[in-house]
Length: 304
Image 1 (cartoon, rainbow, N blue to C red):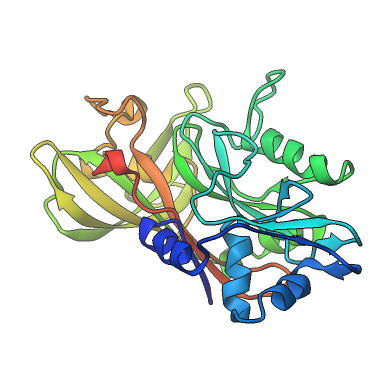
Image 2 (cartoon, rainbow, N blue to C red):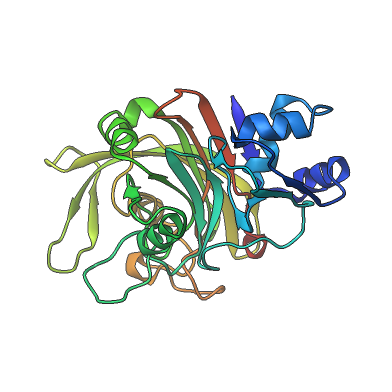
């Protein structure tokens, strides 16, 4: 299984292995990965592929994570040292991983996954469409799941219709694990637990309501574990067994410990001027290669 972490520890380790920037000129047409394997014969295949995962590779000045990028004679390939600044589409949405079929991004809070219909609205979808079309004007991206506007963290997108179909129509089989971290008001009585309820939406207020018994709504299951208890707040890890709209937010409110900053579901405080919910980890089967891939964006420093 491929694992990708954005931790400082990994960055320091990679920096130790790749201290200098290097530039190569392509002598004959090739795919990017075989070219890198030849250029870095002293490295293992996984070490070379990690250069792509960490956005250390640029072709003709454009950063790429696609191992199957086509190189032509005269192209310039640059390997950057970890920590060296590299271009990203927008500070609101950072690319974590990219290949010819998928994109994994880390979005900031306050950014929509896709448009609500307003003109010139900046969303993950619009930013990633701009990104792929800088390289190939006819390319597209497809949203296969969403995060609330006020939630930050990892989001998976498809880059072609086959990948989109396989991810959407086999979502429960392909998505192995999704976990979040949240700062909640107060301190739960139990160190860990599971919340099961049925959710329905008020179509006037667009607010979700939770019932402990089946009332015809959608079943939602959230497991939680307390990572740290403070005087006024607690840091929780939350695992989703289902993925319903506002699921974690309504379940934390049901528990009696709403997420800090979440006025919609009963929070009394807003210490970070945001809803303190972050999609931390995402583990799934690649829709084309079926390889298991795991990403970890860590805990936002301010949550601690």
